[in-house]
Image (cartoon, one colour):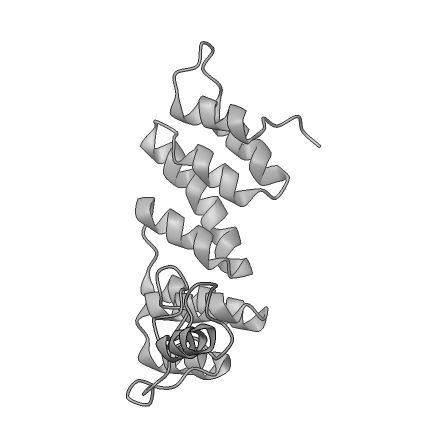
Length: 173
């Protein structure tokens, strides 16, 4: 295995002005060769030459599509936008590999309503209009349970319902 920089050294190479400027393309290629695609994309996005940057990102994009890695494609999409067909291909591959949340997210990015419905069904999510009382945790920004939707017994300490507090006060008083 290559002698790759740790996360702190990589951060310094990519985001500060090191005394000795590293070969970002070579570093990205090393990360890619050991299967660390996320770090390779981080390096490739810093390549100054646009044609080289796009060529390298296209290579990782092809791998990510074949493996259904939504989050990586979502990052690449900012620099090198994916087509609707590429999002559909990613969604189908994610489904085939059992990555159902990636399937759902890629289907949403494809904006193909039939594919989105298929993904929702695969995850057991209700169809639009059928979600009364349903909380879609995949859509929430932080995955938090909205107030009042937590199942009984899941309230964090100090968040006891008011009637429990009143009962405790009556028992103590």
